[in-house]
Length: 435
Image (tube, rainbow, N blue to C red; front, side, top):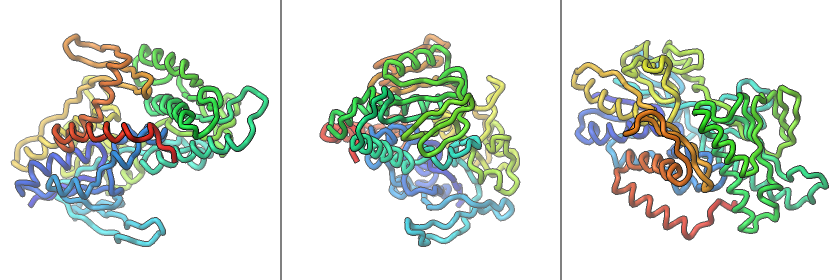
């Protein structure tokens, strides 16, 4: 059978493997193989909630092997480390246990059609000390580490008497005023309040725990409209989140953060959400063309410019957006649309039919501020143009995005069952993780 290998089990890659498995794998029209470096999947837009402790990742993660069994595809554990386009094989790096012992050796995997969807990684922009001392949020493990560091800071502050000045006893710095940084700042304020409610620390959640959001540009949420940016800044100010704009971070140490303008901030926890970049492995893949940001260059069909048998989509691909004379932005909705497109396109390709061109539709953007609020704008619809939304309706729309992802993986009936099950479990669980 024709073998389609999908590298990357993120939102787009897992949805594509599931739908191709249901359509082609179940009928034995093609063999579908999903490759990922981790054994479990967690929707990446949820990582800021894991970092704040408002979501337990073990309740929401999905085992790739189980999904493969249910939906007629195969799963291979390992990270992409090489490509041979002549032999049509990829190389997977060896997999090691926590103690360093080898679980799986390095191995090769043959393909007829290769789809690369390995997402993106944190861009530290060469800032001194940032990679060493700042906490990134690329994986569930990093998000959990961030939450543990927050709890440790609270316990240390509880054990040490407060100073006589008006400075917060705990200072959290979030570098990057994009969606991740904004959402994390609100979630952390919510977590601080809930931790005090449970008696985990005697700190004043609004004044003893300081949160500062640092953005190099003139405003937060630079990718969204100025209206959304102003509304979000006003809401964060009410939550006592300090916003520093036009401030570029020059260096980071274990207890301080230094800006290019000469400011020094004493910090207990620095979270880096300043930007993303393509994984370095993409520039090492047997001559595949990349752009200056390291993304694979693809045509409108999502085929790479170098090899028509290799497709790429999501954050790791530079796909043209002719209507805006630019490339498609790295958003979850783009990966979702591209996965739907490739499910149809690869089915047509197996039949020898020509491939259509992918057309991206921008449905708008939403930013969650925890249980406090949500803001954003919706594109198109009955009214046309852009519609600003805020409050409960925006919060509902934001929560529905994750439910649509679950529906794409399990169907609407199981999605509804999963929603009810999680609601029941949360009714008897703490509102945040306490350890």
